[in-house]
Length: 175
Image (cartoon, rainbow, N blue to C red; front, side, top):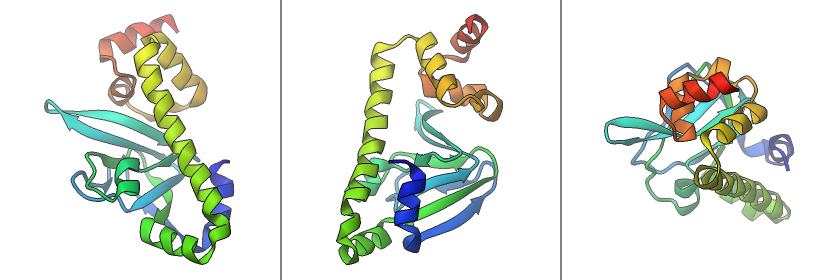
């Protein structure tokens, strides 16, 4: 299932919002109440470790992003979500989703399948960090998102790949 199918099924509970470049959309230590679909733009989820921010997820045009653990478990998140360029997002609020599903149980499966996709993406990211080389991770990222190197600064890309900027430079030179 892709974002377009999900959005059409849940259109009655969706809002469209615009965020400026570098705007914080969700702050750490708060419950993430929204699931965001990137209509156009670039958004990242990140956390702080040892005085640095670490990029955990990047969503580009037609991608989805949230602090999934917080969204599902209703607990404060360790993640921030930030727009990396002016972005238009389609926003699905947890409370509105819950009410919608109570009133429209035929859409339960659609919601479950979409949330499973987010989980699978997360599991694949963990597997990639554990079992693939920096070169393989970079190649996969560029294959999935060819415009990423023009739209996201290299520091965020290196952080997302779990490598230093120096290693990223070497990987890019070989690519």
